Every structure is written in structure tokens, then in C-alpha cells.
Length: 391
Image (tube, rainbow, N blue to C red; front, side, top):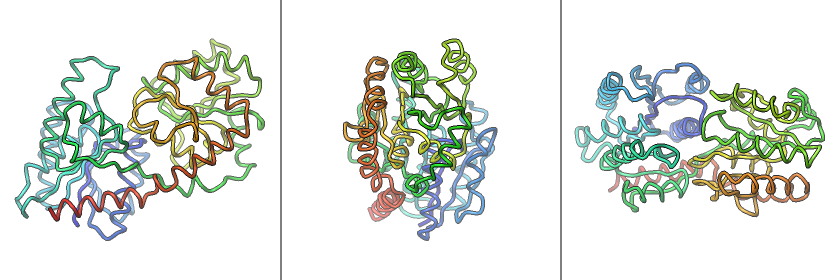
């Protein structure tokens, strides 16, 4: 098949990693794959480099940007449409908000130009732009735009069942148009045990003792990612346990504010910041820790949850979106969103009991190995393409 994937930008992020894995494996299976993306501005280059030397082709549309701006959006739409007309793909598969809207509009507008009912138009829902933590007018706008784009979409792929449920509840698409394909993780690096001396060296680098129970959070230091709830829980847990520490992996616009808050609370000796780590360093960060704590208030299905489980680490997560599809009493602890008391008790239970951590970690690993394997995801996607083209 001739397949075109479209995504707004290649920053460090779950949707971007998912898209790159998809393009890579489809190309390895013999399909002719092209990736259309916006320019690699600022931190985007971290993942854009991964497109070089691959079996698929990458095209940069300079005017494809995340911010809503008609002076960019109209030229970007026209550029995408021109590329699609030249390539004449069987499938146009879009990701993210801006790339998803413009790509689907362009693909649908060209249906039937080079073959009956081609291209098939597919969209992956990695997360939804509307959510309870923003104004109702903005949510209504996003829902209206997504409904319009849904009328130009043949099929949706959700990274979690929760995304399908939320889309349908908002009137986006029809139930028979959805399938779930959990976002693939290149698992080898997470499953391969990292030697103890490297893990100790990683801890020492950030001033954490070798025998501390480390709670790691892998997320941008940004609004709605929940670091403030973790810091609040640390105030109590640090008094109850002398041997625990927190590790914040990531960077973002709130980094300085959180560092200042930690300093003022007298927690600088307990809460450490790594800054931005490359994707290849995440397995080391997870295996050098004992518990994953994820308190984001909105997430399709955070990749860090199955990544931690592949490393045989239990997860404590707010019960939002797709989290409950991987976190349960056998793999970790789900916590009511914003409930710091529950968060404290869930963490305390795991800090106190090393055997419980070990058991939950091992059970978590077995529960996600096949579900998040790259071939599992690509089988679903490839079968869907074939089905749409047959129909």
C-alpha cells in the first residue's frame, strides 16, 4: 500500500513516538510510507533526527504549526493537499489536533481522484483537545471542529478504550468506526535489566542514595501534569519515611516554579530534577527507581505507565482517561484525581513493602508485554487498512 502519515510536529511525546514506530514498521513490512510533519523548531529536533536514514520518506511542510493561525493554516492545508495529489496514497492516516484536522480535510477532498473511494482517511486519537480543565466555550469550539472532521473520517484508532468512550459521548463519530490499538513501545530497552552499578551511578548523579525508595515521575513540567500534587504528598511522606526520594524526569515551563517551591518547602534534599532526558535514557531512569507516580489530570494513556511496568516497576496513577486499562490492584494503585490523601496512602503502602513492589512489578510486566508490543499495534493498523480498501 501507499500510505501517508501526517502529524503536526515531532517534539518529544507519546503521539510522536507512536507515529514514528508506525511509519518504521509499516515500511519494514514493504509498504510505501511517507510522513508529513511541520518544521523541527526548538525541541522538536530531538525526534525529527529519528526520521533520517529510515525506509520511509519525510516531508516538512513549513507552514504546518501547532498554533491556530489562518495565515499558516490555509497554506499548510493547500501544501498537504498538493503533496497528497502527487503521491496518490491508498491511505491518509493523521495524528494530533492540527495535523489531524488539516490532513483529514485534504485527504477527504481528494477522494476518488485517482481510484474509487481512495484515499481511505484514518485518524488516531492520542488524546482529545476538549477536557474539564478549560473553558466551556473553547471546549464547544474543539468539539464542533472534531465533529466536522469526523464527517470526513473513515475510521478512528484510539490509543485507549477511554478515548473512544469520550469521543462518542461528545458526538464524534459512530461506534462502528472505532478500534483500539494500544500505543506501541519498543520494548527491548525496557525489558533488558540494567546492571546495578549503572543504576547506582544514575542515582548518585542526582544525589540519591543507593538504598532509597525512589518515586519517579516522567512528564513535562507543565500545567495539568500533576507535579504539584506529588510535591504536596512529599511534604507528608518525607516526614514518615527517612529513606524515600522523588525524581522528576522532564522539563517545561513550570520547572523554575517547581524548583523554587521545593526549595522553600525544605524538600530540595528529597525531590530531584533531571531536566530533559532523551528517550534512550528513560529505561535507565525507570529501572533506577522503585515506583512510578503519575498524577496527570488528562492523558490518553500515558506511555510512562506501561514503560514502567515493562521495567517491572509498580505504578501509582490518578484514575483518569486510559490509566485504568493498565493500572489496577495487580499492577499498582489507582488514586482519585486530586486526592492527595489517597496519593499519600498509596505511596506509603508501596514504600513500606518491598515484596509488594516486586510482586506488582512482575505482574505489571506480564500484563503489558504483548498489549504494547509494536507488532501488536501494527497488526491492528495494517488489518484495518486492508479492510477499508477491500470495502
